[in-house]
Image (cartoon, rainbow, N blue to C red; front, side):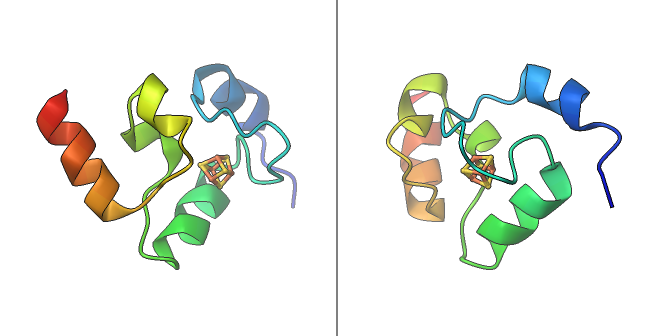
Length: 66
Ligand code: SF4
């Protein structure tokens, strides 16, 4: 099923991994990272998101700094 909000979601998505097939499909994005004990890009600062380290540990560290 095609996500009807994909284009709108992509406008506000900060993920720099543009070739990801889940980009703009937030439910798949969250499920993908959650299954790995991670968080999606939108939980991270623009700078830290580019490291592609989506771990909860990195989120906590990033959150403390910002
Ligand atoms: S956060 Fe992960 S799943 Fe979501 S668009 Fe970026 S690379 Fe894909």
